[in-house]
Length: 363
Image (cartoon, rainbow, N blue to C red):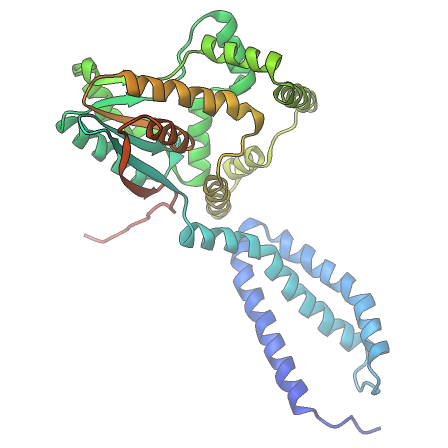
């Protein structure tokens, strides 16, 4: 039997399709092999399995008799699906890497004034790129030279009961400083405290130029208790959250980021680089979103925002430079703008997450 006539359009479309599949496969290989060689093998087996019914269906649907054997059709389908599956498996990592560059996480620096007084709100992020923290420290040193008082975030301890509540409810008993450092190492980023040495040295030499503007654990617990009694929605949300936390503790469950950090710590250099790219992408995605912490934001954000705005408005020092979590800046800015005479003088934006630089030269 003679083979059917050649269809030039079908050949062109097939060529384009296979070219696209090959390119997907080649782009995916560095990612997949960087993770583990077992992943491409598993995807090959999955492609071969999926190709079985698809090959049978293809031959049934085609009206013209095929000059290829069923085995050949199955092999072509298996390879094509393998290439496609490899591309799909690597696509999320490429998407996160690209989105981190073209839509980076940014934080604001807002300057407010009422004429005689000026307040700068510097949005902060606990874990970020080295260049971000270097820029912030430079701005703080410059502010000190211009006569600003530096104000900081930091919930103060109060009594044993409130301190224990704060650890259990808000930090889940973890050392936040070490957790941030560990997250920074996994993401190829840095922890902010490690770059504030010059500012800490100035605070020791000139304590009058540095002040903490925040609440203590007792005040936060009192606000939490008040909301539990007066706000049924808040109370229901907290009871549900606490019950879920108890279940997670019993199951010794861990979130995705924790598992990623553990995998990164145990991996080789290529796996650590992939984990860092994934971690930075996920952090960028989270930081780009507006605060969506749930009902607990009423205590963690709103309550502390009101306290900070009250302190800033009542403080008579002419220049105050505030470094606070970026999620607090919009709320504090709005509260201050409501006061007569206060207006926004300027806003600038700073990028917080970027891939670490690896520069090598030869002398």
